[in-house]
Length: 392
Image 1 (cartoon, rainbow, N blue to C red):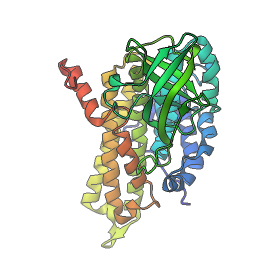
Image 2 (image 1 turned 180 degrees about the horizontal axis):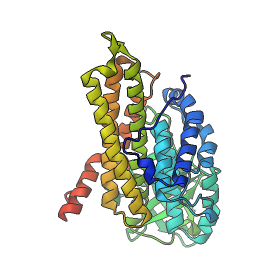
Image 3 (image 1 turned 30 degrees about the vertical axis):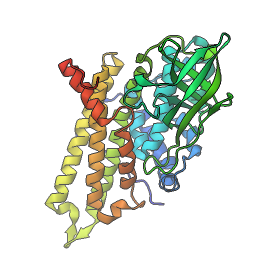
Image 4 (image 1 turned 180 degrees about the vertical axis):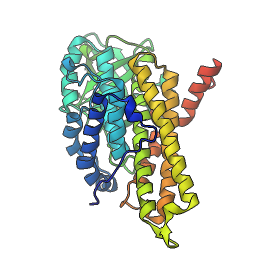
C-alpha cells in the first residue's frame, strides 16, 4: 500500500479565512482519512464493498451531524466546519462522504428540524455515535427529478399508519437501522415518517453492478403494508419543502465535498508530473501539462471561494436554495473535469487502482446526478434569475 502523501492546495491562502476551530476540525478529518480510509479504499472499491469498519471513525471525527447541538449528541459546530469535514472525507472517497452526508443532512437534520422532542432524544444521540445508521427515502423508480409525483403513500388506520410503496437509489439502505421516508397521506400531502428495520413488510434489497460509488452501499426501500406507529410521523413539517430543506443541507455538503475529490486528483497529477520523465525531463516542464495543472488549481481556488462564501451565508441564515444549487452544480462539474484532465496527465497509469483518479472520476459521475441533476440545478438558477420555471 502506497503512503498517502496528499498535500492540500491553498493558492489564495484561504486558511486565513478560517478560525482555529475550523482548521482543527479539518485537520482531524484529514489525518483520519490518511490513516483509516486511504489504506483500504481502493480494495473496497474494487470489491464493491462498503467498509463498515470506518463507521466508528466517522463518528469520532464528528462527521455525523456536526452541526447538531451537543444536547442531542452532535458536536455543535458551524456550517463551515461541516463543509470542511465533507471536503476531507470526499478527498478520500465520494462514497464514504455519501454515507456521512446521508446520516447528517438527510436523517439527523430532518429529525432535528421537523421531529418531536421525543424523536430527537430517541434517535439523534445514537445516530451521532454511529450506533444507529440511517437512510433517506425520497427518490422512486418513476420519480427522480420530480419528487412531488411520488406514489409512496400512507393511510390512517386509527392507532397506526399503513405505508406502501418503494424507493430507489438509496445510499446506506442495505444496512440502515432507520429510514426517514417521504410519503403522501390520503389528501396527497407529503409527510416524513421514521421507519425502523424489523418492521413487518419493510425490506431493503441492495443494488449491485454499479460502476460508481462502489465503496458505498446502495439499495431500495420496499414498503408492503408496513405498520408505522403514529409517534413516528415527523410532526413539524409537511409538504415538499420538508425533503427539499434536507436536500439543501446535503447539497451544501456536496459543494464542499467535491472540492476534496478535485484536490486529490490535482495533487496526484502534480506529484506524478514532477516524477514522470519523458524526452529527458519531467513532464511538468512541458507547456500542455502546465496548462492542465494551472487550470486545475484555478478552478479549485474558485470553488473554494464559492464554498467558503456559501458557508458564511449558511452560518448567517441567509443562503438561498438557489445559491446552494449553483455551488453544488459548479463544484461537482469542476471536480469531474479535473478528474478527467488529471487522468490524462497520468496517461495509462491513471486508469489503475494504483492511483485514486479513476475511482474519483467514476464516483463523480454519480455525484453530478444525485441530490439534483446537473441540468436541474442549472434550471433552478434560471428560474431564480428570470422568475420563469422551465421544468413545469
